Length: 180
Ligand SMILES: Cc1cc2nc3c(=O)[nH]c(=O)nc-3n(C[C@H](O)[C@H](O)[C@H](O)COP(=O)(O)O)c2cc1C
Image 1 (cartoon, rainbow, N blue to C red):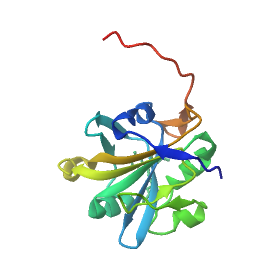
Image 2: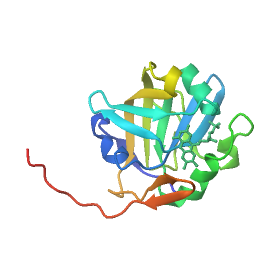
Image 3: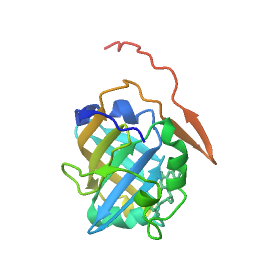
Image 4: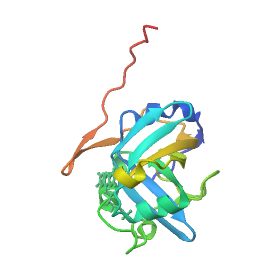
């Protein structure tokens, strides 16, 4: 699998990669156990601090690990990993070691304990910022505390989830200058 040359990226600017809502891989770790799940349901909430709201179903094994550890990593896979992304989102980490099963390479984070996926374009380390909506909505509000992003390509080809097995691939990028 491809490995990227990455550099530290300003956390207040990571929305450039997350506003198009690519389907991401969420890694977690609590004590000796680590896991990875697929996530498509999230939203940017603030730039400074860099906040992101994520819906993580209570039935997911990741839910327990993240609730207990209060941290995770958002990893952005590119289109080449699409099949693996779907497979990771269709199996349960309490039954199998997904890192082994899908041959996922990973490295240690700088701030959180959850692993950074080496074969993903970007890795955003997150700490739980607000737990108020978890109980009623399984909605976690995280602060991105450290970001590492590949130095190229400038615009990675990612996939967005439309539900029911339908995806869109990211398209042409262009700039419309701000009027302010
Ligand atoms: C494309 C795709 C997007 C998904 N998005 C989410 C999501 O945003 N939130 C969620 O809770 N589950 C989502 N899922 C489902 C989880 O990835 C799935 O339940 C996974 O098996 C959970 O793994 P775990 O039990 O090991 O944590 C998605 C699955 C796929 C295939």
